[in-house]
Image (tube, rainbow, N blue to C red; front, side, top):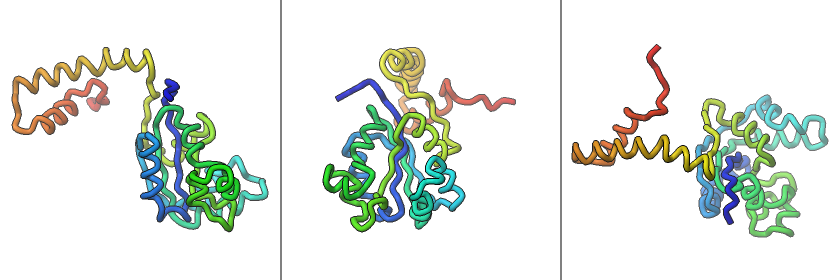
Length: 200
């Protein structure tokens, strides 16, 4: 059901489920998410403490940091309709035992550790603010434009995308290159109206 709320969220496959990442990624794609970017990394203790800073002082904080630094993690930026809530539904409840009881088909029920409720295989941002912070944490060099929907998207397409494509396709018809796809890709790179100005 479309809600006109295209969002981005962070999805994290934790160390004990990293060998299941192909299966989890298959679920991500089957659920209709777009994978904007992905990154495999092993967090240092200092990085993990920063990431989980909001939980500092809680009884489970140290075990959480130990868990996330026990091996590599795979971070994804997912985009989709109401992505934050959608991904959290796919994950299931935080505790593995609850996930197995309440959402047996969920990622945490299927891939979480049945002997440890908090080794739950995967993470998802819980709000728009958390998603922005967590995406910046794992992808600090990535520049993401705001997601446009509805009238904003239509206006952007008609004023920015369509004129460029019309010019490109007109030129393509004139030139008739041997490999039109490669030619079109090269033309768009050179003639991108949003290309940063490097003439300083």
